[in-house]
Image: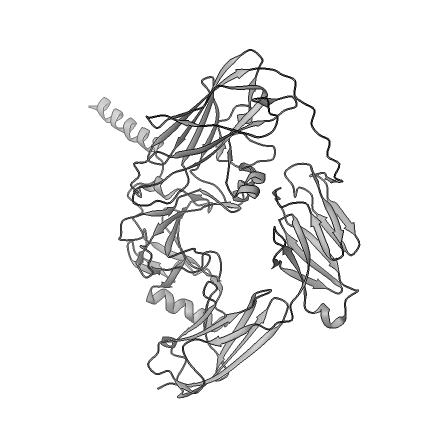
Length: 562
């Protein structure tokens, strides 16, 4: 009997060791079938996706439930990013996040609006005490929406550990139907040392994939020599949706021995920016396609790259036969395999052409100051992942700072001396990034100190001075001056600025501040009369809107309401 009891304890302990995450603790935040438009840790611009994007049938307003009991520990409202977001801390130490919400539940909404009216701001961040907003499991806490940087109605859902590191919610038992193997679209080879080559080429080379009837992949025999690595473009698709989402696990072997593992189980926000070191950033700049490099470049701190031998780099000797294998899996264990047979063949390569373009050498471990004419660029220590040679030139008021095909870890300062400009123009000048084809100028956040304009940016490329003398535009949407609004619940106004964008706005009614929610996608300010601040019959509405260089417009109108 004692032996059986000990065996049972062993089995329970083994199972817990195999899956240390609580299973049946977190429930679905929605009461509809979970269909995903985005998976955990899939590759996004400058970051890994930190949760699940759950489709809401192209609509807003689905009830959103607390995935487990706990308390609202953070509320953030922003015109960008997560939009309206709730954070719930649970007794087991995990935190769940619900983002792009349309609105909160009545009790939370009342708490938030009280703070918004007290602080006189739409955008805010709150950290309620544990006893302020307690929630029960499966309690309605909000309604799904499309706020912030959302590209369409959906719920962004996260589970974070005690260190605020996002984890794959599917580790906790959330079930998403997936019966489809990941797809491998393209394969690339990378010669990585002097004299190394693949198929006689010493730069990145595309290798033709052959998909077999059983769903596996192979390549024709390739020749190679020296230190090389590989990269793939691969996505996964779940049932019920056509979205190309991220994969869960990539494993590689070389001659039967493990070479590298990429485990998309968890990451920290401090390392997510290093996605740009994981992908082939130069190829992404040219094609908008993300090659996942299955070898580790220097200064890549991503912890999802693990169990590697020689940084995932393989060494091919002359007159040898080798096999490199790649396995790509989704969370449900659907697996795609790729075999690459390699013949070692040393050969002399043609000499590389010497580039005649004058380049500026940047030593990554040192601070660098580049100066020419009225422009200077301050590059801080460790801004680049490695030493680079870049183009630096200034013509008139245009700075050419290479192409934006090299990733940076830190922001650099770009400075323009504007002392030669008229005093009346200085107030309206800004630093802008020039579009790739030179046909558009994008405002870059600019600060002025005396006669120097400074912009901080993490992107190389062309920059120049722009001038914005246009005031923002303000237009009523659902009312006219001296109109009656008794039958309406909402007051709507459109605001826009075509050059530098809206910096801030302020709305008052009879000289009293009112909340107007700002939707940047529709450029709409909306006031809800249910806030209860409109109590007079005759109301004088005043809205002041300011753009990013200080131009402002004032809109005034009278409306009546009983």
